[in-house]
Image (cartoon, rainbow, N blue to C red; front, side, top):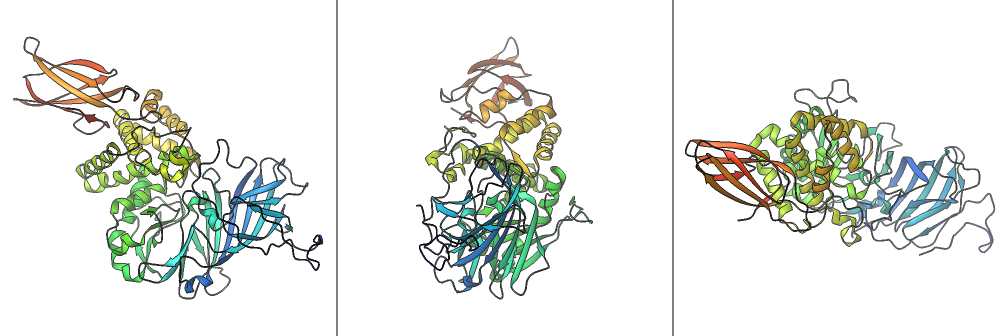
Length: 567
């Protein structure tokens, strides 16, 4: 819907004086559907947001009696101009009313400009003096009731609160943005909250607040808009002992990351129990991957449609799960792992979501291999793989550059992105060995930290570290659907003293023929024996010398290959 431009003038129908600000006083625009798959190509070809300064007034949120409350805000965006041929800067803003827009080439010379809102976007006119390579400041004043993204309502205990919940592209419902993961920026937040509330946001809290009940935060590492959040409520705040054995935190002289939990006062005991190993998780990933990429980390009970949301430095969790004590520790490790994978290294395209969710799934489980033992890890792995095998997405590849089910980005939160993505990493580890695999992950991470990455970037880093071409591996596991389904037979050749094993791949014909090393374990009267065979075809026979006839054969006894056995 196109809106008529408004302005403050003495004569209503006359054009505004050049000295009068252009102000809109009409109704709020209709919100658009979130999660629509954007067209192919760069999302914002001409502009790159470098920094957001967001000032939000939540003072009326304490009186909320329904599903929302009015807010007012000012967002100042520092934007680098990549292409000056555009006559307007385009920002995502849905449902809220832009009241005024000012644009200048420096922080000190913004001028009121014409603007319009249409189909969830804000268009603000640029003057002819802006050129490629300039950095401009765009200041948007806006107000209204958020339709999504900023959830203002009463919590599980009946107390009011406000929480941002942005994934995949719902930041646009509470501040103007280039709302796409490829456009990362630093951010600062000024939140005017009701008396008695605490406020959490990305980064570190700044002490030079403007007055009582005003909270300021800043994060100096670039993050995508879907991770930019605020949370405001009556909180009980606890500290988790971080880095019990010493950490690797470049922001702090003692090498330790401050880790805390922010929960509703009624749930403080559950919070202390659920997040008790949060510091150990930070330490483990700091040693396994790279130093913790941010200043601190908070675990926050919140209003979110997800069980956990990995917002940089301030992870939000389901308020119900914390209140009833059912939030799993595996969810916590998953979200902590996201601080490296998804947050610091962000997928550059929605189709590469497995680089976030698959990595968080696998590395989240690795914490339990480290702390609770390999059997716990194998249990988590089996459960994850079974979730994929029973899913309805096995006929889809992990990376699909042509379509998304239902043209809905939320549908990417599926067993391909999470479960199979994690399985791909485990199979790479099994193929390459621990040393090469983890060095390859470190190479990938260090190359793209605080930037974006695509699947070919990860493959390139792993190939460089291993010295092996892995195109065949990524083709069959990442860009093609399905998994191997084996039918196994065995006979004993008495004269040769060999077992003859038939391995037939009987998966769907449009799924690939999988190539892999496969371990076979045989049980004989004299114990167990193992052999590794190279599988390359749909129907193969392998002969293995054994000391006695086997009574049984097990395929992949240690669980390195995602597969099923058909009787």
